Amino acid sequence: MDHDSLFLSLLASLTGGALPPLPQDPAVWEEVFLSARRHRVEAALCDTVSDSPAFLALPASFREKLLSDARIAVAAQARRSDRFASLCRRFDGEGLHPLVLKGMACRVLWRNPDARPSGDEDLLIPPGELDRYLPLLREEGFVIGGEREECLCLSPADGLRLELHTRPFPTDSRYFSEFNRPFGSVFETAVGFQALGTRFSTPCPTLALLYLFLHALKHFIHSGVGIRQLCDISLYAACFGKDADWHSVRRELERVGADVWYATLLLLLRDRLSLDPGKAGIPPEHFDGAADPQPLLEDILSGAIFGAHDMARHHSGTLTREAVEGNGSALLRTLFPSAAVMSRRYPYLKKHPGLLPAAWVGRLARYGRETGRTASGSLSISRRRVGLLRSYGIPKKAKQTKTPSGRSR
Image 1 (cartoon, rainbow, N blue to C red):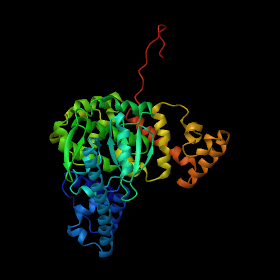
Image 2 (cartoon, helix red, strand yellow):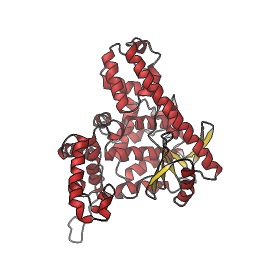
Image 3 (cartoon, rainbow, N blue to C red):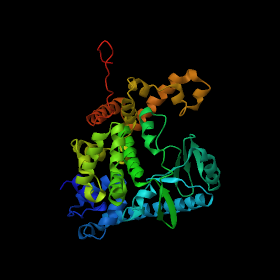
Image 4 (cartoon, rainbow, N blue to C red):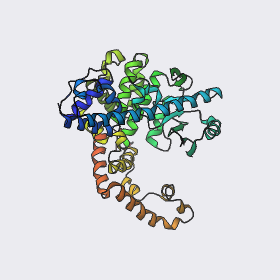
């Protein structure tokens, strides 16, 4: 068994599958944990193999280094989880009831929740309540930044990152803004769950599953969805899929042109991450029309966490996103953004817009330093990934209509 297959089999054991035969060769373990670090699941893998004879037979120094790193990661996540729970209890005491999007709602489903790290905690709040949250967060020591629709809040004391969203998905993108349409009743249909002595609210199973799929699709379109997100979907579907309206989930993914991608992802979850469609309540016909899942799997494994393994790939996300939006001049806009876009990173442009060409030069130089290569690297990656998106029918081609003269338009 090659190390990628072993890595996936170990992940499948975290989502309900049996532990695979484990290798004796330390070199194979090194490759497996290299992949695990890239996808930030090393603590979870350590947790599941730490008592196995094959792991215990590894060189003591190698084994102890893995376990030490895992313990540090788990302890750091436990502190952030406790802080988040404490914060939500305060919100509740103030009459505020945000909805947890993924994060804690998925982490509690893992065998050891704190072995599944979260880069941030996402909360959905009604648009009119943002000003009630911000003073409380400042009292709690958070530094706040961002736009009115989405605020990033950071607690320097414990590293907890909190994102407040007034919409589940961005509204500054024509394509992604369409993802928000089915969430109009998300607060009215919310459900609760208990963790860390705290009652949290989260979307109902149907909307929660839809959000997980659409969130994965958003990252896939940009620079890549991580294998950890797929584990979250597998675990959530196994626990709550029977209570979900899967036909509504598929209908919304069809609406945004992602029905082939959805069927292919289900196939990948079933065959590689131990998702039992029967127990999850997934109708058999939802697998119809699936494409070969191997290219999708290879894209996920090569991209690591959110496609950020390689900066060139990360930067290529602008082009893939523009391709989905149907913007023909994506390349020019990517290399030479507008003054409004550039001023976010170069504030001096607000007072001196004439310096835009100089800012472009500086941006391209910084890009080269970050990626270690020219822009051609990102262009090559984006072309490959745009081809992958189109193989799944993303973006959905507009239907042609006939004019009175009989010509298509």
